[in-house]
Length: 355
Length: 258
Image (cartoon, rainbow over all chains, first blue to last red):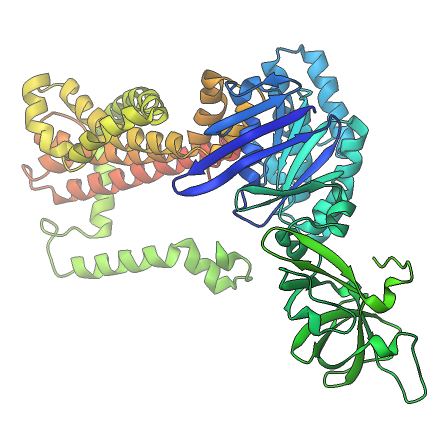
């Protein structure tokens, strides 16, 4: 592994920010550190940079133990949520900052800055000051500045959190493409699962200072290994008494279950319509219908169990109070430490894969 | 300015320019002076006449030059001492803790309270007056510089060190530039303290300067001279401050001077 964290512990006062954190990262990968706020993801990033020192444990970069190295000797690029551009320096001088420390000559600095401005899609802005740029432009310049000294590792702390939703989406895609172009190993922190799933090769999910799961976005989505991940990823309803549902039996020791909208089919049949699995469907009452732009989100109540499903725009409208049929295709049951996916018995014989 | 977005009418513009305020002040002053003789409360016209006389015999400009010269010398020395010391103290937490209690003690000792002591120590010449100005101007400059360094945005320092900057470079390329706006505020405050303090010093002892002019007018029963001195002082202070602000805004805009 190119980057390795081994049994890292860190406390701030009585807050355990890192609790025996261990994971490794392959060279060239883009990693998303995902977790709710206060879960310890930023602390991990800051310890990697040397901006924070762990209480115990080892950090290895390219086989070299960097525990004792201050940030200026770690060869990392860091992008801050607040951009942290020097307001009193022009864009050129901001990007040139690290190059001047490396004592590069003037001609090199000039061409390197131009090259980086080209890379971040803002050529010709050399003479501007940070306060003459938009938030998105500032973050691009901050990335150019972090990349200028050719670091081995790029760390980004919630880089787009302070940027408007629309620009944020563009920047995500752009960041992915830019990092692919240079092939630098990168780690970014986010609390936004869409961002992590869309951008990262691999996601590290943190909660209460612990690493819950490490895996590709698809793996984490399809096989959440801990109850926390099952609830945190995707849109999830947590229910009790899942064995009351048709086609599901109680799994020993697992008293709760997570149902995602994609596991739920909602039908409103007219008198002469029928469905293959009608006998496996539950009677439910619609408790709410919410327009979501590309479709509707429907909340339904099955004898006290609340579930959420989605309907595409073109389908027959369903209204609050309607009686509907609901097919639960699968769910995740969980106990304190593990999860298990179970599929509706009626569907089990077919090899359908619903995601 | 929040109300800048609304388009001001002509009346509002005139009101904001301050012209009306001054007309009211002059009117009240002029009307008030009708009830008293020139020796007690000279009118605006009599004040202007006194100024013309003082300009013609050369006293006014000589006094302004004397006061301004002392202010500039003392204030510049305070800048030269206060800024580097403030930068140093501000960047070391422990030194700051050492210095802060002393600062909070001397904050309540105005320069004027030290006049007598300084006369004994530095004599009746310019030295004691300049020493007083240094004392008066030093504190706002020193304190604001410390605050400026200490309040440097920590993410800027972290960004610099991630790019390989060692402590000394971080100090000169991040902490000092970040403190410029606070330093400038301190330097401006220091200038007004200097002007306030020089008048007091010149009133106590001396043979020239605006303070001397204002104080000595009582000896000759020339109340108009005192008024002329006070008006000159206000104009001088106002111009000096505006000039400094203008230069600051022009040259230090990117350091956050507004």
